[in-house]
Length: 631
Ligand code: ADP
Ligand code: MG
Image (cartoon, rainbow, N blue to C red):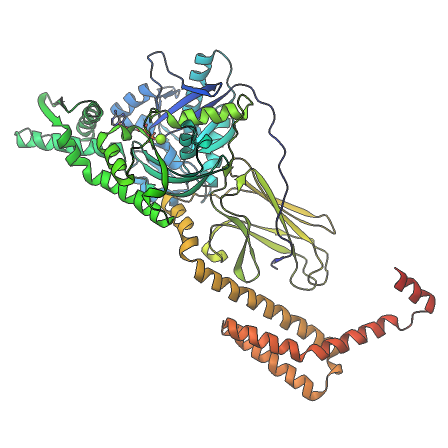
């Protein structure tokens, strides 16, 4: 009940997207979000009345359950944490099992969704809500801001997502936008958007790096630019490393200074929050000044803390070193050296920290690109893309699918249908046939990953194509179509061509791949290339051998009388040798035994053919015979 490949994929383009009106670019961040708009290829972030572009990605609920988003929600989070939610992006498209690893860093209660594999629910403001609902509140706020600034309704957006976001997380993001009344024109990878903002797509082809250090996450991506298309070559990072950790180190230092001065504090949440808030302000000041100081007022006992940039840098040096290490290992895994990189883009508020800039400069031997505000750069790139997609400008970016998509075929071998880094949208089809006589159903197993064997890839979906009329093995024509839309979301359909029956699934994996898993999957393909090739060759030779043995059994049952006893026993011996080779997983022996069997059964095959012809002709009149030969 499995598939055999017949044809190589053939490409069919998807229909064009419809004409669109005003569209904005949105960076939906873990810590902060930004909305931007581009006119004549000039993007600008949209500010609130006070001139702030960043909206803290925090949602709170008031007594009657109304949502409050951004700065005021952040204030509520500080006072009454059970009424507010931050960092919800970490939960997008994730099931309970996926988040246990990060649950420790999230200060709110998480429940499992309705089904075992459903997205988690967040309990806050007296209710359980899905991450999609909560993200939608942030997006709604951004939409309103854009409408106020542009004085027009805004119904379309390009939204950015981390390069490692899988299908589930991308779908969740798109659903959140829809809920907020925004049609997503395209989901664009954050590093790609940042590179676009710098106009790198119009520059020299080559390798670019994007170093993104935000509040709680570090992402490092390598992009390859070719013919105006960015491919995410490799990504790496740490989902628990960012500016918040810098704050923590400063806060700890201040609290220990107080202890040293005889001010014994009760280290409850409120105390820690106050210290963190002050730490953050001091940290941000040190991006501009050489030294700063702050007053920490706890339990009516104030203390004063001085912090020089040198002190601060000594505190955070190990964390910064770690980001550089991650960047190095991503480069190494991609088989590149720092000198191969044509430019490094800095993204994220924490890259304002001077030590970070110096460390990146030193690691790559060139100053990073810092002209564009690192808080806004992703949103600006998204806005440019939104303008391009609505016809306002002529530069059109294509994105690529991040991991190969394929099907499991006979022997557990993966047939890659949409290879990694294929520009999307794309629709690729491949034909398969049945393996056994009379096979009436076929199970389709869709997998994602770079490995050659299905067991080593991520399973995305399984479905059955049933109702295939019984035919001899190889007669059915099963066409499987993989359609990947512009957001890397996949629909798979299978149809039997002679009967027209069709089955279709929208592939929505119920839980996500985390950052590390994604990076592992990308690298695993390279690491295991040789082993995988051997495994694949072995699996294929096993399939060929089994098919030959199956055919032989059928032939012997039907026409065994055409063989003499000696011939029959010779063939039986050769068949037994092949069976033993298959059982022993010995590829060379399978090859040799299969060849020996084929040579031996050649005469048998010829005699069967003669008999077949004689049978076909017997009983036919000359007239009929002429007609048959003539057609
Ligand atoms: P995310 O991508 O996770 O949404 P951001 O890119 O908005 O996060 O980064 C937020 C982080 O940047 C916070 O830790 C914040 O303190 C830090 N940050 C903002 N401004 C500065 C600055 N001037 N100097 C150092 N860090 C800063
Ligand atoms: Mg960000």
